[in-house]
Image (cartoon, rainbow, N blue to C red; front, side, top):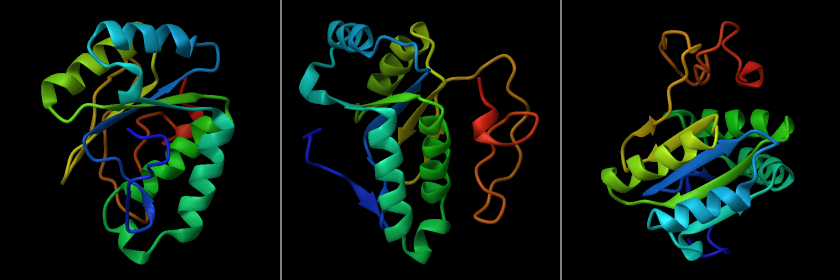
Length: 159
């Protein structure tokens, strides 16, 4: 992923063919990057976002989002990423256009304690990491928002 790229759909971040991974603040993202490189994802394929960068990007995306962004979960995912970034989470966006590649990214991310790993396909966005404490997923919508699978249903209560 070229550093200046900002793939969008309906005005919000939607990096099709990529896995967006969120990590708790204490995670050594340089170590994750090295592990990803060993797994076949060299630095040009990995984009890093600090918590501050993700908050800024989310704010920009939400201010530019069109009404169509609420038809899918793109806008809700941006809000969820922002909620984690407000808590200091860092993000890696990894180019992984094939399912097998996305699974390898998720395996590395899980080893390093990632909170979320979301694979952006053309028509669907798939959560790749499950946590033992996650609750059963319920219906999501623009009105209800993204189901964080926490007892409160709010992303800011993860971790």
